Image (cartoon, rainbow over all chains, first blue to last red; front, top):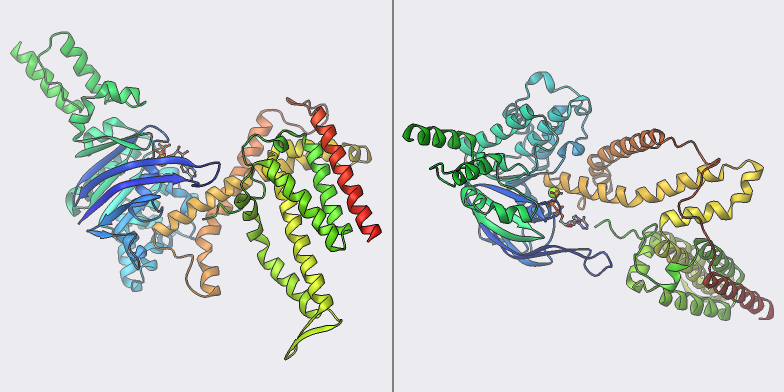
Length: 283
Length: 266
Ligand SMILES: Nc1ncnc2c1ncn2[C@@H]1O[C@H](COP(=O)(O)OP(=O)(O)OP(=O)(O)O)[C@@H](O)[C@H]1O
Ligand SMILES: [Mg+2]
């Protein structure tokens, strides 16, 4: 199980006055069970990139392989691909349309042609995964709060039971508690179900905390692809791209400049706390 | 997939046609449309073709982009052509079962098709070379005299400019929602007509909701900036004729004269 992207290029509006390069020669392989973070400045091509992974956008040139099969091959079953590679869009709450929450979540699995019982069982499970109980089932999705709508939308994709879950800024515009809850759920899916996760986010803290691997995009090109610790060592370069390292990395570097004997690859508050305490005890 | 709609979409290049005053272009479009109805001989249509071709060349908009707008009227075109082709009486050319094609029918159908295509192309030239804002400014100014008899010219042109402004936004939105539903396994392409219509529900409901939301947001934002209609409102970029507009008006009038002349003489 893997997603492999080879020499991927995407040009929007090819052959018109509006033509715009959105992806330039992107290559990577994502293995089963990875938790990949995808960061980049606004307009760097993140959303464009992930829409190639389930075949919603077609590359201008290059190829995408899912489990070794070229998805652009003739007769490739795109619908099946989309059920295996679940994509939650940026602001997914705007895709809700059914009369109640439960039917909306049923939409995905029903499109897969499953039996009614199976559809409902999946919808139930997906809703409980995102932390919505039965009291929400009969509510209109339009009367929920922003965060609740977001959960319903995520459940709508989870109910298809994808092998890979791609989320485009799932926490944008949510309050701190809401975002932590959603990210914890996602991380739980990764740990307990072994789901491959690709998470687009603008929060370096979240990336440091959850992602096992970080891909950095800049002007449509992949610039870094490594463990978050390694990537954040390049914080000066990240800043030039309009990004940054987690706040705590700056504190650590500042402390080191003042002679503290701590490692330079600390990216989470917990790590930094332990390292600082250890250094203090020593000194 | 939905980006084929070019009507109401500005094509940003710098050309002599782009630089003209919108009123000049409005007048030109009107002249062109009138000339299409005046023309009733092959020579008239030939002259219109030459004029249209010349203007399209001047716009610097790729021709392929220009004709994209025609896809929208394909069905209308087919219907009107077949009506004219089969239902006109006259000298019979071909007879197949109950279908009969007459010489007159063929002629009317061909003229009708050309007329429709040129109508769309002519107005596409204007919308591709004029920003929606310029266009409504031009309309407002040209029709300003109607305000004296109580027609809310400013309000109408404001509504038009907002509507035009929102076409690309709604197209983009449709594209986005469509993709989001496709990611959930929705299928908009296969199936019979009823299945296709049903498949539109997951697209149309969110689209309508977002259109209404945008409309209320916009109304609120306009009110917050004290918009209260046309009276006493000034312009940031008031329209002013340049010498190139005078030349264009001259050319437009000359063209009209030629077309009327052709119709009268031939
Ligand atoms: N449908 C489209 N048509 C034309 N150009 C587009 C379209 N979608 C995106 N672009 C352009 O492609 C580039 C990459 O956009 P993309 O949405 O992938 O960025 P992003 O990294 O997701 O940004 P953000 O962080 O703001 O979501 C941008 O320059 C954008 O203007
Ligand atoms: Mg994006």
